[in-house]
Image (cartoon, rainbow, N blue to C red; front, side, top):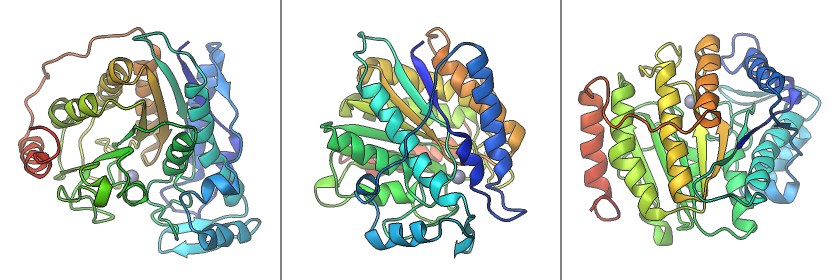
Length: 347
Ligand SMILES: [Zn+2]
């Protein structure tokens, strides 16, 4: 099988207070999906913990010291970000799970046109964590740590596509001046964390290597597919990454209680199928995925399963045309991104 999952039961040891949306039950949902995968005879890799040196490529020493010092007892880090006694161990395993996924994919010798994918199912999430502080349920930036690890292994062109409903601000700032890492984020906007405008395109040598796709509340499957087809896919084809990393949140689902998008479960499957095809044609099949948000348990479970099915099943040509027409949300977002990116891409 060309897909492995990376999972640790310790991800349930991160336990924010009762009533918090990023709750332990999310780990139980992930574990059920992992168990079903195991029962099919497929591979589940245990993660190793990320090392201090790997974490400190992305985070300030003081931030890492503060988190490590909270191991074994609860701590409040910001208005909505908490640690329980098991959070530090869960966090270094979450970051390490994405590193494990990178190692797995880079250690394969892929055949042309075939997929080599590793999907790290992790808690706590990571994409809001900043260099020197925790933020938005996130302690360590799991994906950024893994991308920095892949750079240290010698890669020079890595693309991250983040389609959690919130802007992946921590990942953006980690590589904002770095042309080796193309960071693309499609998110509800304006919305938490208020960054991710189309005009945020990177600085210095990294100018042009940040692509934001801000979308008004109310977007549908057809809107996301429109933006995939006219923004994400052409830019990835031109950048030609050596590794594609998908930062996958399920909080753009229609049923999600925190956001206001209308993606369906099948829509998540179609997005994954299209990005799988990009990995197969543009990146030597090398694809790493990591989870972020998703706060309706059933919607998250079904969308996670649809994503795995799209990666694990036989290659299916995604339908070129959409079942439904895009709405004003998708059309307006496309115009906005074209205007912002025409100096760099989409010429
Ligand atoms: Zn989110």
